[in-house]
Length: 185
Image (cartoon, rainbow, N blue to C red):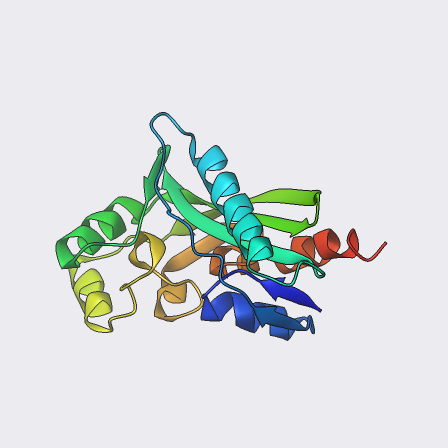
């Protein structure tokens, strides 16, 4: 049994998928990128701070898992789109290109903390303006980093993936299980 410091339904589903029992705990932090902070450092920091916050809000007896995922293209982080124009701009940039998905996981229990960063490359097909407009109308891009969800309709845009599919969804299953095993000893 662990605590999950996340409100992400996807992360909860993924933990359930691999049979890890968990309870939710509040791990809400300010998610603001610092000046000159690299995408790798940013996503690692957020995962670590979520786990630390969750541990403070837990009973202090079980490990707390925090995670964060960012989409990176040409060293620029693509956040959740503000509106339709923002989503279209991001999807046009990702069209016919390869971008990176960085997912960081962090487990905190007492004074012990373990972290991992998983990098996955995702390549999109060439998207037409019509496809992007139709995709926006599905409402799937709302609230999603870079305006897409690989586990949803946008999966049909992906021509190649190099790395962990589950990390792109939001939680790398293999690495999460391996990290949690370190807390069983």
